[in-house]
Image 1: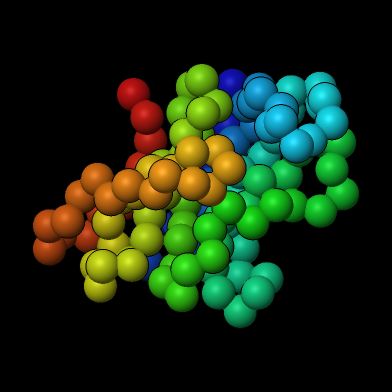
Image 2: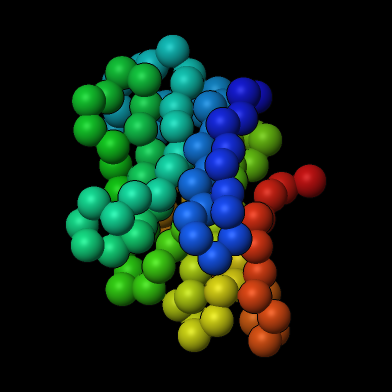
Length: 117
């Protein structure tokens, strides 16, 4: 897995990972390389997936809260990310297609830099 990361707490958190990911059923076969990243391109910070053979990224989250710092699992099936959906920055996971969002933390502490181990 190749990792490209730049995070500054409280300012900008951008984490993009290049990792082999399985092609979804609705996509043409690719060379297995994809980038998971966040962007504020739609006036809100959401998580996106861009596969090597695609011209436009696919939005994985569409929530009024900020969704930041995506980190794909080693097998490429899930993505961990930060979100303030619950009023506090917590860690969530979702399937690579944006479904099955699960909140993993809920304490008053501000979570940072999620990653799978």
